[in-house]
Image (cartoon, rainbow, N blue to C red; front, side):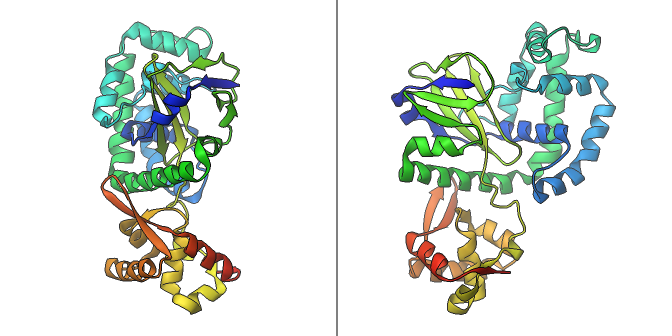
Length: 325
């Protein structure tokens, strides 16, 4: 299994960050796979997969590049650099372009576990990778970035709260299906049989949520490590059809009951408007009633104000009977 040795000081200084590049690379992997894990991903693929495949058909070298670079157990390092805190997509992808041709070919040989196809023995691989990643960002991610950013911010608030409730061990056990805190400073990051890596004291340890795929891990030398993980996916399903406890609607009204049911995960007013179909004023009024009743509370994440159920809200949900559509 893949193990990182992490000191308690490094773990205590770790932080959650947004990475437009990580979101773009996750979307590229989803396009490469061609199948989604839930209806939201499938709908996105129906919209963007034809254009992506047409882009690769027009550039067969890029098609072979992505086939090799997204390996079964290793991603080409030059193709997926570890984002810095506050780094824009353009700043991260500039590091892809800055890779040397030999570095790119060496990375790809690791992924291929042997010689490269003749078409990839060339010097413009970093530029072709940059063009492909920029296409994915501009055409398939950037149009949705504001909405995705709010989802990712909500996830970070929820994860931070989880640390407060159960400690870092509880959080690390839940990030991805195969992540585990094993004790004695050992963090299992995947199931691959790689030698353990010691995360140097003073290194940055970053946790980056993405809305697509299962995530990955990466690092830049000894100075920066990242765990890219799938967010909670609060917008993935059709929340207009989300069931609520049978008696709750009669008690506080169907609209407020629906909002309270959604707020198991922190969400912003804009998100609630988007997923419920209610107007902004209506959502605001219902949230005010729920706040005054102590059933939800407000938290801030970056520029967003997020709402989440309180302990009293949880008790009310549990006491209100079985859910109905």
